[in-house]
Length: 114
Length: 115
Image (cartoon, rainbow over all chains, first blue to last red; front, side):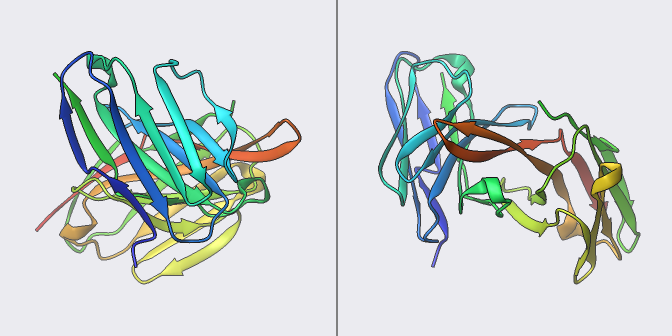
């Protein structure tokens, strides 16, 4: 009965490779997010989708491309990986947040680029 | 954008002690959440508390929105309380006619509870 799930949990890859992280939520929420947590534990939003439409894109390099096939899924594809992309990536979901709804996070994907 | 500051940055306690963590924010908000990131990296929702006071077991939280701060109280701390505590507030915006909110996080308080 996992609410927000991500795969894989760990991802180790070499510079220059392309990789994807998948996220699914079974809460019936219409808004999903990707956050990045850096080595100093700082969490920052990257993208948000509402009902499959991109609504937030926070000055993220265009090597990062989110895709939402339906409102329960939000995947993150990263091209030409760089050392600086090493971080923990969290997916989250909520009902439309403007009204002030609680946000729920997945377990995170630890990406290590060597 | 909204600035969120948490204090203290680090806190070391003996098991059984009480503590108060503070979150200040620079603008009015209509949503504030507290999270605990455990040593395994999971972000656990503690409270959704735009205003007022809520209690859940040994934890309670108070948000005074008019004065732009929130407090998280941990009583009778246990070693399992160790980890990083984050507060996060919503910044509201509009994209192509769709209203949205995005969470802006504080830098966290690292809590270590010793047995």
